[in-house]
Amino acid sequence: MIPVILSGGSGTRLWPLSRSQYPKQFLPLVSSKTMVQETVLRVQGIESLQPPIAICNEDHRFLMAEQLREIDIKPSAIILEPMGKNTAPAVALAALSADPDDILLILPADHVISNVSAFQATIKKAKTLAEQGYLVTFGIIPTEPETGYGYIKAGEGIDKDSFDVATFVEKPNLETAKKYLKSGDYFWNSGMFAFKAGRYIEELNKFQPDILKACKNALNNETHDLDFIRLDREAFTKCPSDSIDYAVMEKTDQAAIIPLDADWNDVGSWSALWEVSDKNEESNAVSGDVITLDTNNSYIHASHKLITTIGVDNLIVIETDDAVMIAAKDRVQDVKKIVDQLKKDKRKEANIHLKVYRPWGFFHSVDNGSRHQTKLIVVNPGAKLSLQKHHHRAEHWVVVKGTALVTKGDEQILLSENESTYIPLGIVHCLENPGVIPLEIVEVQSGSYLGEDDIIRFNDKYGRETTEP
Image (cartoon, rainbow, N blue to C red):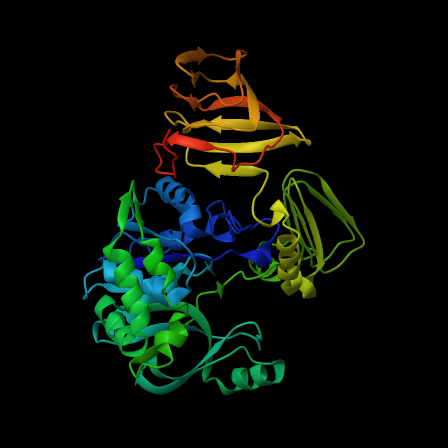
């Protein structure tokens, strides 16, 4: 059995913590581990489990690789999608990368499952059905008339633990959801599946051959970049966008459903995160530096500043270093509308944090103006920034911790703590950490344009796009 980790979502409903360049699956929202890490770890120990296949946006490739490395998981592949095409193509890529008889366990990377032992027991049942040729989905036993999930109606029993799928249904209104709950025949659609790779390809070829053809073409012209598989962009662009539900599961006559009761939550909103979080006596879930007075039923997250609340109920309060979001708990589905407005206004807060991760470490924007910007840059031991130059800015570097090996034009300079250098506009330069501790430098940029796209790369050890001199 091969876990397939689907990590293509942007998590806009958990803004401002989740952003397109650092979405919710890479955040530690319910434990000290990120959601991607929790997804991989909760299946460890299952018999005959193979290394996972991870599928993610190419912009997130180093996040995925680093977070798997942190938990000592070496994936069999990290497949990079040039653009999102929904789940049917993503699963096709995994199926085409595996042997036909391999059983794929399809797992979205942003779910919370508290009862791991019950989850693993259900996976074992699903494996048995998958070996018989079924395409298995996991149906969450509903606990309330939820209108935010799609539902699956169970049909005839296959055995005492599983059923044929009668039909998939869209998100219902409240009255319909109440009927579903009362009937006992309907389950929440979890978006998790198990089947043989070859069976999925057979059914996809039957119902959506254009998806299969495009995915084959994208893989036939793949390139390997470090630990990553890069698809042929032009071929994948031609792939239709569709979910696995619409493309295959609703059409096949071999769909099976296994009920799952394992304290599942897809954490699709701040109110959902409040539900799965530990709470105090006032039913508040708090994180960070928070003081509350006469506050109840609220979720309050402080990243950098002290947050105090007085006499409020049912609020969501989220603080990051560049944004504060306050919402009534019953209006959190509208957070996406705020993100849409930010994108319309072309504001960077929709996409990136002030702290931006790179394959060599990260940088944190400290201050900026119309012609200057100050950053803290942290370079991991042995890591190296690309050889580059800028057309519109000069840079001053001051080492505050560690040792820096600086390439500046034709010379190389070794800098220690409290030493500095100046990189004039247009000079080819490079920064490297030759030491065994993280290198920290303060960078002051000055110039007419300070955007991150003012970088001409000549050489990059991480395979990022370069422009030859």
